[in-house]
Image (tube, rainbow, N blue to C red; front, side, top):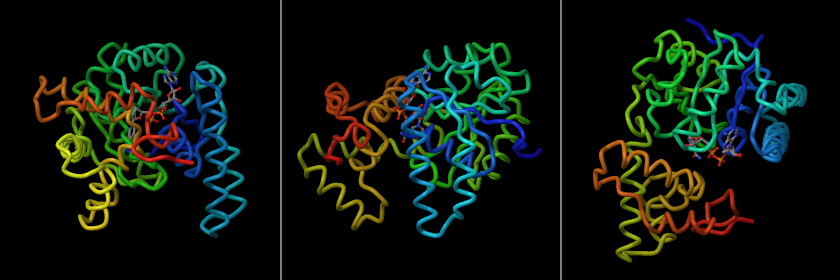
Length: 288
Ligand code: NAD
């Protein structure tokens, strides 16, 4: 098995926090990237964020100006889904919703070549279920990156029941070629990291509900004394409360409403209010 060759493009569907990061990493690794979003302004923002991030690397002498310009030039906006035809790999990073993801992949199957690998960046939804409605379920695999994508090494390569082992291995090798540390896993709710991390968030919410301490105190204790990179509330602000709430709902449902995974009413209220975290300028904290 080997990584996908750079002579064919990688398409990234969804140009939010994750899509932009995935596009950046693939472009730096030498691939032409076609970036699509139902909101064209999201593609424009992703492209300018990628340029800013790479220019910062040049300023810090961690990338040459020539490599930076070449990587930026490899990221192209796809104006319609048809523009991604010919890609060797499509990585989907849209909203965390099974029906919406299924709908997108059904559209994609009519556009891409038969040998194109379809990958989902879902955090928690069954890869088996996303693939089930496809004409060729064997070509769909999970390619789960972590936030922020350029900095986080891990990629979970998730096989559903129907995923072709050769497809999973190609995605694994491609992630390694992109400088990541891939790991194979089977499709279970939340996979490895999001399953193990659920209690980190859930107990944070419970502590807050029980008024043990405020969010900033809990974050500071976990970060400054507990050895964690971030506390639960600042991490959820980074992830996005809409995304985190959807993941909790999905894991809760997938484990037949196991009370350990019960979603937080307070987080639902934050989503209702549009307090989504960094991406909306306000979550537990305010962002300039
Ligand atoms: P986001 O809200 O930042 O971006 C999602 C983007 O998808 C938006 O720009 C939206 O306009 C676009 N979109 C929605 N429906 C679409 C459609 N049908 N076609 C094309 N574009 C569409 O979300 P995100 O944080 O980037 O998360 C995206 C996916 O990645 C989710 O499945 C999420 O669970 C997963 N994920 C998120 C994180 C995280 O920390 N945020 C980490 C790993 C995986």
